[in-house]
Image 1 (cartoon, one colour):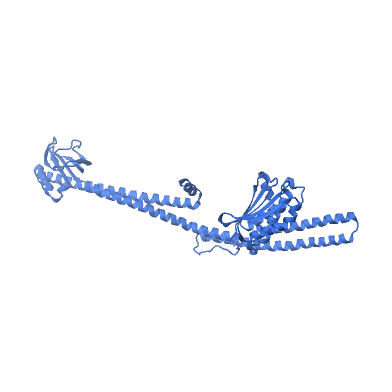
Image 2 (cartoon, helix red, strand yellow; image 1 turned 135 degrees about the vertical axis):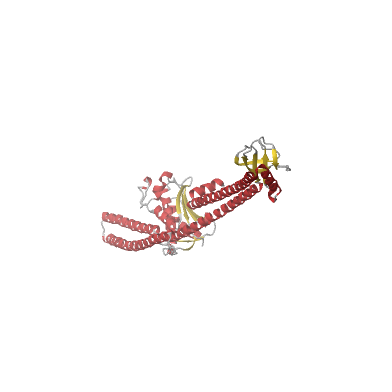
Length: 460
């Protein structure tokens, strides 16, 4: 599961953007909170040092005015004041023996001149050590003075501050994650809207355009550029429709007239050799007309023209009719043909193109499945409700390395070179699949060939 999420995060542009946004915001937030915590801790230390410095200076001033007697009197007053619970004072001899104060001994690890030091010591009457901030001085008469404050309260305040910043960090990271996800969702929604418009346009709804919100941002610029491209494509498709329709009329008419001339010549000619030649010319004219018609159908289908002819169709009845129509031809070539549907199936399809596509596949099986004996047509619902049509035979099949060539327009494999045909049969099948937002695949039927036509159509 974690590996799948990681692959998604590294491959998805939106996921990478969300991750980058989270990392950047989290880094800034952590940096700010750490700075605040450090500055708060430093401010507490400065306050503690200042308090100790003020106490030390007050004691030194008393010594300067009245000597050791005045200093001892001030120390006694301070140890009786309301702040005695946090005050730490010790006046000691030059050898460290206590004179007055609330420490039993001069700390062995503390020098006689110290501006600031943090240490844990026992005060008189206390059964546990206190954390202290102290400063020491050497008096002119050689005696020692230690002044300080208990910092446990400041430490508790620092701990509270640290905990509060930790909770703020956790809450901030949560809010950052939510904001990054919302930002990713916003971007994903914008891009999904663009993709959906493009998909509907590709499906044949050429009036689709991306809404322009008028914000003047990058999305509006992107939408305007794509809309301009869609306008151009719509004009080109309209021109293609006009050209193909005109081409069909312009080319079919002379071929049809050519056939009429040939048919009259066949009636008027009695020479056997001339009749044979005219008959061959008539056959080529028929092939040319069929090739032209198929090529135009392929071009129109690949351009997305023809979706307006989609209609709800009984697929089971359709393939049954095709099997019945081709039955006599199949039997003449030594095959049997069967049609089956997994269940009653209806779908919105281009009935004429589907019929021609399946018919082409049946004819291909007749022509190229030499040595085979059976042709089957089947229909079923695939994943996501897609329509799956399969035409299979038990002939020699097509080598996997040659299947791409077989699907190419006018592509003909070497074994088929001596068989009449245009190489457009499978191309029409592929174009039909494209028009239905589907795919065509050639697979092994063991033995033989399976042509799988998967159509992305709605169930009727």
